[in-house]
Length: 364
Image (cartoon, rainbow, N blue to C red):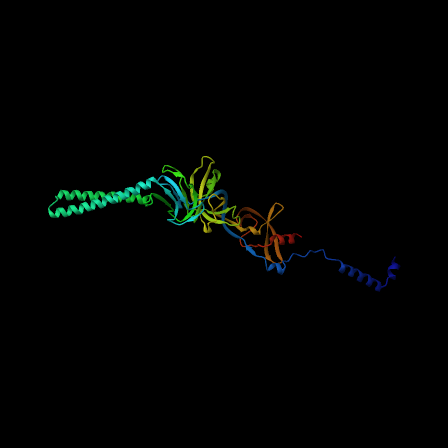
């Protein structure tokens, strides 16, 4: 063996050493390169900052759109008669003083007749008074005659004024017809009368209901278990089936502190402006009531969250080459704000747009 080792030339040893070195250099590295956010994506993403804010609570309720009862007029018949000429239909917009219907009425004929008679009696009493005054000045009538004529004139004037007030309260028509007029600007939201219908003053059903609908009420149902979670002034968001993408903002205006005996719910009222008359009475409404607590908590935009394998994650951003995945505990989400009980500190930066795409890249 010693003899064989001595016969190996130095050149052969150098060749073998060089071959071994080349083989080591050609072997690929097992080290994995970290993810770096591409410049094209970096220009489009938005970065959110972790903040601390008051805790929001939300309560989902059902309800319906209703008339603003403070701006609704129900028109009842002040006289009996025959409906002869209806000029409006359900849903029509009417102006204050616009004629809604005509009613032929014996009562109106009596009122106009009383007015005419009172007017005629006043004219006669006036002529008698003037004649008596002239006779009194000439010595042909006594002072007592003058006083009697004056009293008769005063009574006739009083009777005329009474007949005029009664006629005015009943429309003021002298032809025996009663004209139903709208007392306000608004929509005809109820119509309970048709042509040739006989109506009476003891009928409890109104002829028309007029509402301006410039603002409406939303009446929401609160079950007993949730009564403690609502209070006056709470912020409210209302949505409807007719406008699923539109949110109507309002506040709790009134809480009815009694339970409905039939369904055991308490009603709360929200007054909403109604531009464009989008909200119609009897529409079904979904109501979200929001209120704040006196405590604060870490909060982030809901868009920052990624849900995977029964766990919420966020992407903490420090630089394009330093993005980490971090699990978080979500306590509550109200609208687009999520409250975090564990996993983040105030001031940290989070990726707010396309977080799922970057999350998948980091996990690939």
